[in-house]
Image (tube, rainbow, N blue to C red; front, side):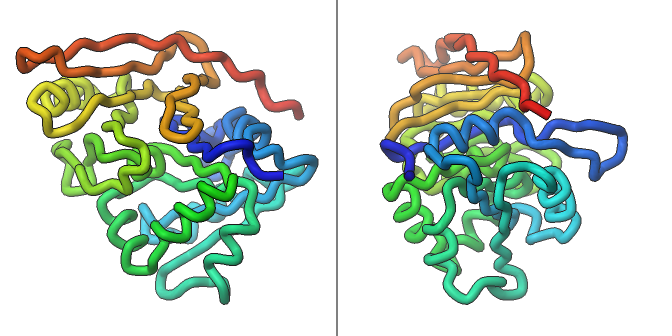
Length: 248
């Protein structure tokens, strides 16, 4: 059964680490939340899109390793060097959840547009498939945000899909330049009212309305940043709902 209304889960969170190795990942609580929002039943279908790192093969190793032995039915869509499924639209519409990984949001959106993904993903969203993602996979649904897509120095990105009419600030607490740059961009009108997430926090949108903030750890927050009319901003902290840990 699809979600009761179009739903996006935009986050600075995702897999949980279970060890020191780069492949040691578990399904984080946000995926159980997405399955619940999708009303997916006992075997949620989740498709991974990772064009933000050029469909790097190791990213799929982490993805399938995390979901191995769980109730989820994972799949993936690659676009490099060509789509790995015959009918991209049919494959994505058959999912309960579409999850987008992090990397370069600028490259992600550009590649999607070449392949007609925005139109297909919009159809999925309106049909009740829950869309979600982390970092670049969060910013992409918004008007834009701050990004290192163009080099180590953070810059503004304003060419997101824009279905959510806000700016988006990810990794708000873990990268020192993120907050002051986003404040400046909202203050001067480059970005609209923006919603931001500390690491470990996600935003749940029902339609284009921010329904709630959630987290997988204590002591982290979401924020709303608005222009104050005098070239500055006001920042309001949002207390997230702590998600229950995933049952083993």
